[in-house]
Length: 623
Ligand code: G6P
Image 1 (cartoon, protein in one colour):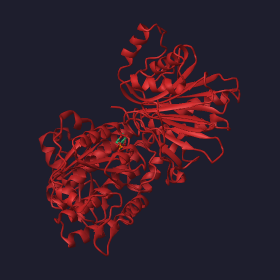
Image 2 (cartoon, rainbow, N blue to C red; image 1 turned 30 degrees about the vertical axis):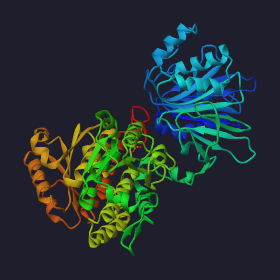
Image 3 (cartoon, rainbow, N blue to C red; image 1 turned 60 degrees about the vertical axis):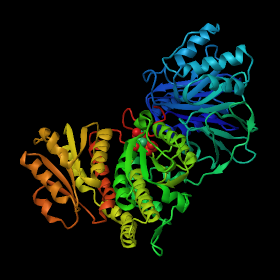
Image 4 (spheres, helix red, strand yellow; image 1 turned 90 degrees about the horizontal axis):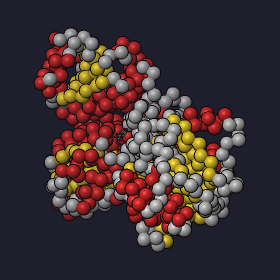
């Protein structure tokens, strides 16, 4: 959700903080702010409403007379409590100007905490409507009145708050330190170490923010506090004891996160897909043995044999990937599969046993609802596998096994390459489970794996010609609604197509199983409603064609996604996009590409910000 960056060292902090915020802006862009401690040990803050560009513009007008110093932090906000205004922008100050704080998450008991502070005589007015500001008051009280150090004050604060929090604070009382903390699964906190002997240390919400500066990083767990200075980083557990934490070396390449000549990150990420899919599949398919090798799944054959049910939890686009996986796993491994939203799962006391496999799909590995579901599964003894893109993310660290997407950093808020890479991962998992369960015939496994290996090339071919999307965008970008239809394994792709369009272009769109159209959406059909139908060659093909006929009979406009070589649809639909023939279980990977391009071109034609659609955030670390 919100993005946080902090730096202590010998260089000017402001450009480093702004650079970090640029890489974090996908997490939220309602406002941005910085706090820098200057040579006279004063905290200088600057905040602006809206995108980071507004803040950088305001700073540019100061012509270098703005904040200077070698220790500072920044924040980019996705509003939860209080409107996106300057007073609600972070950093928030303590009432006596001794402390500033930035925060990602939600302090559920902030009203109660405010009341308690007043009862204790710390009765100062609040400037904002945020839950965060109470943190500044608490920290300042503990430092100024109780004489605690910034670390002790942070530990005490962590003990009082309920909810989810990644917090970073500075204080004029100890101007050489940055103190960071993490509470609950929400809001990752990563510490980065500058070159040996440089005295530089970083703190951030996630890896890409500091990747240009360091690859050596440590992740905070819930309850941890980190104190960063020019002499090093000290970690504390919830009891205030100094602890050692592992230093990991991260391999992700920062260069892959740049736009590389594309107009938008989303566009680049759509065109990254052949490579992302190749990287995701590479090394995991052994055509010699006909088997799938998943390096980070460490289940014994006995454990695999004992699995009797699969539950998939995810949110947003990842949930759509989960719906596709249901078809894959049920068909290949003959295991019953349930798919649920992370946000719904834990509130219905789900039935889970140690024989259940819980699969969490989350490209960020930080979506709080999915993490909560994962925790619920752990408490109930289920085995957990997460399908994750971000190495070292929370989901990857708390699962029994991980299947990485290998999609590289995805910056565009609407997921594209992470979606198709997760589908490739889930196909691999389905084959893996089918082989472990003995339900998958070697010939079927071999043909599916061969088809999977050919998928990146097919995606490449599909991306080679985008003329049709310009034409359709020109003709249909003024439509008020769109309907997307698919059946079987392609029904979730219809949902994903509708989601992509609505989140990017703000056109209302609905995804529906084609067979259900006659039970309601058919009432909407007229010449003004574009209908996108996935009508590829599979066992429900003729039924989907009937749905196309029904739309045409009511003067609807149809774009059909058909299998190459199927000439019959050209006479029925108004436009046809041809997908290369593949195994029906893998069609969703191919069908997703036109969905992405269609949404991208319609949204850009409407002048929408495709990389940062309004109100959205890339990783949602609040409930
Ligand atoms: C947000 C993003 C979506 C994403 C969803 C789940 O809503 O805007 O693109 O699909 O979160 O994210 P995850 O990281 O868990 O896959």
